[in-house]
Picture 1 (cartoon, rainbow, N blue to C red):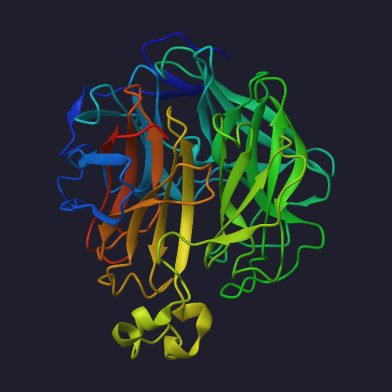
Picture 2 (cartoon, rainbow, N blue to C red):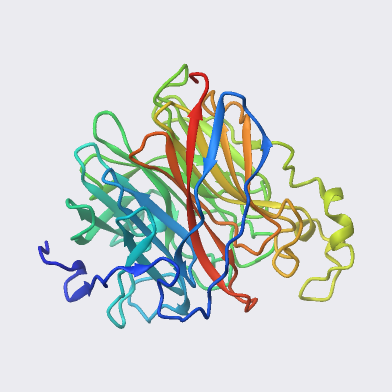
Length: 456
C-alpha cells in the first residue's frame, strides 16, 4: 500500500505522526532524565599530510538513544534511529528487544522531528541497511530475515520512499534465497532464542542498477559455540544480490567463515565498493570477530573473496594487554574470577565497523574499541576505550589517518558514518552512556569537514 499523506506511514494501520520541530538539546519528552552532556575533543593518532579535518559541534540526536544508524539524503535530510530506554512491544515478527527511536532533521541536526510509533508496533530496524539510488529512490531493509515457506528461503521487510522520507511504502515483503541457511540452533549474545539472520549496514547500488548487501548468521553445520555465550554459535558473513530493486535477494557467496576465528566468528559486516584508483570495482568488507577486525575483498563483484585477514588501525592491537593490565589487574568477572586470567575477558575488542567512500575516492571507516571487551563499561577511563575514524588513500591497503573521536568515556562503541551533499564532509554518529549504568545515555552526531592539500 502506498500512502500519500502528511504522515510517514510504515504499514497498513500504522502512522508515524511528525511532531513539531523540537530543539536538539531536548528531543525526547524525558526532561533530561537520560541526557549525557558531550564534551569530546577528537585526537589525531596518525596524521596524513594530505588532509586537514575540521570537526563541527557535537549535536544531540536522541536523548536516551544508543547505537545509532543514520542516512544523509542528497537534499541534506538526516534520517536516524537509535535504541530507546524502553522495551519493544510484543510483536508477531522478530524485533530488537529495545524500542527504536526514529527521527528526521532538515537543518543539519540542530532540530529533530521525532516519529513516535503507534502503541504495539515497532519501527523497522534500520541496522539492516539504507541506500539512496541514483534516481533518488530511498530504500531501507529491516535487519531481521526470518524463515521463509521452504528450506533455504527467508522473508524480510523492504521500505521505499520517493520524497525524502516524507512518505514511505512498506513494509513490502522481501524474499531471500540462502541455501543451507539455519534460522535456529543459536541464541543472540544475550542468550535469547534466535529465529533469524541479520542484514547489516550497507546496501550498494552497482553500475547496472543491481543491489548488493551483507547478511550474517549460521548455516547447517555451523555449530561452534561463541567463547563467552555458549548458546550462541560462531557466525559467517554472506553476500546477497538483488536484480529487482530489493524485492528478492539471491545468495552470492560466503565472504568469510572460520570457527577458529575470534570469539564470535564473523559478524557485523560493513561493505564498500571502490569506484576510483587501481582497485576500482573492488568490494571491501570489514567484519567484527569479537577480537580484532578482519577484512576481505573481492574483484569479481563478490563471487570469490580473499582470505579474511586481521586489520589493525595504528597501534590499536587488541592483544596488547600490557597497555591496560595495571588498570584492570584486580577486576573480576560476574563469577568472581580475575579477568586477567581469562584471555577472552582481558583482550580488547573492535566492534561494529562502518565503511564509506568519499567523493575523492578516499575511504572512511568508523569503529569502536573496547578495552577490555566487557570490563570497559564499569571502568571506561582507559584512553583506548572509545570511537574512531580512519582514512585510506589506497583502497584500504593502508590507513594513514586515524582519529580518536571519543576517549575514556562511557559508550557502547557503535558508530555510523555517512557522506553529506557538501561532498567534502561526512556525518559521524555515536553514543555516550550504556544500557545499565544509570549514568544516562544519548546519541550524538557531528560533521567532519575535509580539506585535501593533495589529490588522493
